[in-house]
Image (cartoon, rainbow, N blue to C red; front, top):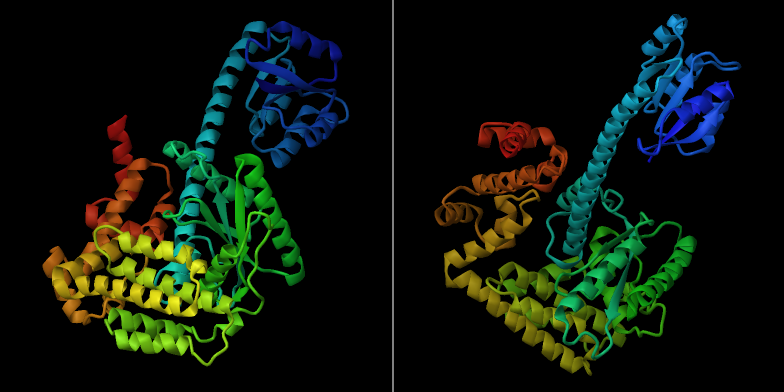
Length: 539
């Protein structure tokens, strides 16, 4: 039903209009009435806006024309119908100039009212459909943006990075500007849903639905907090992570307690399962994001379903200076250069025998090294991802290692497995190395990729890589990336759900004008024209 406000200073006229037709059958209901413009404005400020206003022009205190003028400023989209007599020509002229939707002449004729309502009903339905479509598009855009934000945050804490400048640019593109600051203060929270043993064992499809419900619940639980960014790993759907920005330290502490308690309560209340939660140590700076994530995983590993929160010992990160970005880089080089003696030397430098390292710090460092292994495996592993899955499981069970000697032995075994994968890719054939590089480009084409950065990342000479790329793929690196980006753009254009500016961002262009220029050069027409032609073909 569409709501109408009726304004006339004569009660008899209002009653007559109400009695003329069956308003409900026409799809309308008269929800508000007023005797003059002032009274009507007061009601409009207090009540939900009606869909249509029918107002007389001659009224005391505030006539219809003054009322229309006031509405044009305060409620510009409000549909207004003017009631007037034949002698009110000047009033009607003024009303038309103000842009009223239509008019009715007194005395009101039933057929004219019926025809006008039918016309208004069609227009209002069209408006509602347009708003629904806008809401749907906005929801799709938000979902797409949230997915990309989650993927980026996951990459920040798990994979090998591009430069900080490149990651900051990508954060800005994905509306994560609050994270794109050098000294960002943040904290990670990890929560795992614990499905009781025996429940859903024979219902794999229902288990998938439960995972999905868990992820949706976690996202919905934090929607109202702008400083909370949820993300998760596809390989472990029963676990969600949250990156939480820190503002005022005192209020943040209260927020974290409230957040943890409500999250566990929601999971138990709505999903009927328990959960284990871990709160990581506060970090400062983009370089510490991986440490913050690892500390939340360590806290989770020490948690129980009974506790509302599980936190590692305070000042843990201050005790992990042995694992600096420089040490991490050197450790990565020893593995990718297949130098086990150098790896062992680096490992012993991190875990000095004479250093009295608390077990929780030892466990944390182990976790960070396994994360490094996983990033290297992802870069060089071709075909299936069995090594990555194995390393993930090692990361999840790091708390179960019984001694430091066992941990060091396990790290050496893992390092050897990763080196074997690197050797297989780097030295078996140029084609396999090219396949690894191509996979990397296919996953990261939305970033600012360069031959120089790829050559450095895969330990190749830039000139050699350029020739190898052209020989193996058949096109230059630049042409391949351009084709990849624009091919993805055509898919998004066919879906007809995203704005051109959003598509430009998704496929890796810093501006929509640059995107449009590249698209037109490649396809001979701009993205807007391309989309319009697709729409006309599908009609």
